[in-house]
Length: 171
Image (spheres, one colour):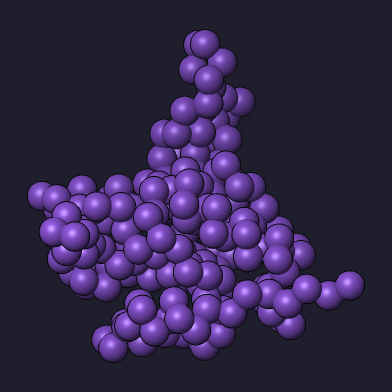
């Protein structure tokens, strides 16, 4: 009980907004914002392992060659999420960037909000992929929200969580 109160007191709440060519993550508690292109630059090391060399706007500045691949994991003609592993790495980087200067920060509570390519709502597959994306990036709890943009000045995580809409099952 005491530990839960301490964790709650120091919890970070992140509002993740995703567009095809932009990702904006707002730390609701501190007000810090990460707002860049959702790019990731990778290379294979001499063991054949893929390593991340840049994320966000700095990835765009990397010179592309045979060893370097620059990916936008949120760019696909039909859906917002095209490369799950790369998207997870982008979100991990953003979370680490926003939380790196905090003395104590438990895994964040996250509201993940696809901002486009959601005409008619989202599918169960998209819903689950977005949840898993945020969990894989280090979130403790995840709410998938779709609808109009949330106001960060009167952001109420518990209310958003309570009103989370699950995609309906169509047969």
